[in-house]
Every structure is written in structure tokens, then in C-alpha cells.
Image 1 (tube, rainbow, N blue to C red):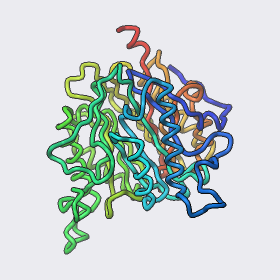
Image 2 (image 1 turned 90 degrees about the vertical axis):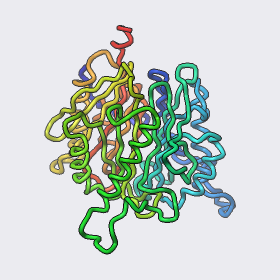
Image 3 (image 1 turned 60 degrees about the vertical axis):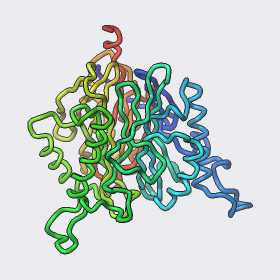
Length: 403
């Protein structure tokens, strides 16, 4: 399959609230308290006449979740069937007020990853929070909440893991035991020798072990991970994570992963959060392609049943006119992905992690017409980064035909 470039970028391409279903999973475009025509609506903001009644973050969260509720209902799902969420909030100090509203909407809280991205990272001025969601169709997939008896109970309102058929969706994991110490002692460096070891590596190894425990207790392992999102407070340390990941999986195929920059995490002192999507061991339809790509783009694809998951990490050249450079880099990444995904596929979802909020227009220009026309689209920041990350979902229609 060769993707055609989308030369006629429009705001609606990025802002449309789209839903695409594949293998019983419901993929939703990224949502904010805004609409394509007017930005943040009055009902999602504190009244200028009564500025001390309510809060903007709670009004925006309410507006956003009501919108999500209506979208899911229209497509045969519901809030109780949400299996995965990622939350991007401008300021982690708003989290408690946000979470109060979240609890009202989710009686059984889905797995959640929450990261702070800073006030200047939202694409729509005035928005304080953005949410990316995957839900499921209960008549197609068996949905179940999964806890690990070996891990402490989270402080916040989320389920550690939800299974949907063979799919497993883990909440973002932090280097903490949720106790009085914040960071787990095993994830901390000796304060007497602070320069003799890496705080990031200590936290990363601990968090990877937590993810492994949760995978095992959910009936999976790293060999069955489809995609891993690694959020770093200092994304310039990504090479250290790259080296650790390579060492961990020497002699075997490493799970595909993206490194994404954030401004803040919900545990004091935390430098890393890891978010995993996997399938159960023994999933017969799991297929994995070897990672490949060009000098500037690394691409890896996995698939389960009809659904393929492709991750692309793009090193954006810093020379040249930025808009055209990004447009060309995004287009090239999708061409690399098409080579792995193969023909007879339908675009489902793309989640783009952009180094600069102003890069959204360039990303839209490089987005293939097939995705621009039908796919659910989310754009999120990668704070402090120079790279672009793409998480691409497609439906393999050839697999359906064979079945």
C-alpha cells in the first residue's frame, strides 16, 4: 500500500471527533473541551460574572467526559467499557480537581496514564486537559478488570490493567510503592553517593520490573507487548533508555516503544512513567515484524487478528524550512509503515507526539489522505523533544478475507 499525501490540510482533519472500530476495540480521536468552530465553549469555562463558582479544570473535564459518553453510546459502547486512557494535563496541580470529576463518571475506573505537559503545549488555547481513549464493544470482547496481588494499590482512581479479549491495557506505571516515601527506595540513588549512579536508570529498572509483574499477573510477558510508551521528564536522556532497552532484550526481539517528553509526573521526584499494551501469552494471531527504517525513521509493527500497531520514531532534521521538513518526514514515516503493514489495510487511528505545538499544521500536511479522510486522530506534545513519535493502528482487511 502506498499512501497519498494529504495536500489539502484542514482544521477538521485534526479536530473531527471520529470513531473507528477494529476487532471489537473502539478507537476515539483525542478529546478536549473544545469544538472545531469556537474553541473552548462557554459551558466549559467559569462564568466571568461568577468567577469564584466552580473551576475551569472541572468544567472542562465535565464537558469532555460528557462528550465522550455521547460518542461511545452512539457506537455501541459506554464509559464502563473504556479499556485505556491517556490524560495530558497542563499543570499537575490541577490533577486533584480533575480526578474528582473523573471519579463521578467512572464508577469502575479504567487504566490511566496521566502526565503534565505545561501550559504552552496544548494545541487549542485555553484548554487545560486532553484525553485519548480506547474502549471496547462488550458483545464482541470479554472485558475484565485485573489487579496484581503483588503490587500496592494505586492512590489515584484507576484500574492497574483491563483485559479485552486477548488484549491487555496497563495503566501507566511509576517508580513508586504509593507509600510515604514517594519514590520506592529501590528506585532511588544513595544520597551519600548521588553522582555514582543514574537516578533515571534506577527508576527505569524498577518501573520495568513493576510492568513485568503486572504483565505476568495478567497472563502475559514482554514477548507479547505490542507497544510501550516511555514518558520522560528529561527527554534528552532518551539514549540512556535506548541502551537499557537494547541490553534488556539482547538476543530476542524487543517490544516496540516510543520515548515521549513530559514536564511533570504525578509522583514527586519521578523521572519516568511506562505505559504498555500487550496480549495474553498463547495468542495465536500475534505477529511481529522486525523493526526497520531509514537513517531518520525507525518503524516497528505488530499485529493481532486484523489490527496492526505500528510505532515510528522520527528524527526530524533541524536544517531547512521546518514546515516542509516535518511534512516530508511524516510522509516518509507513513511510507515506511506502509511497507510493513502491506496492502489491503484500512486506517484506524494515529496518535502523533509532536515536539512543538506549532508542528500540528505541518503534521497535517504530511498525513496521508487515507488517514486524513477517515482515521481517528490524536495529537499530543512531546515536551523538550526534537523527534516526532507516531502510534499507528490499521485494520488488515486481507486477514479478514482469509478468515
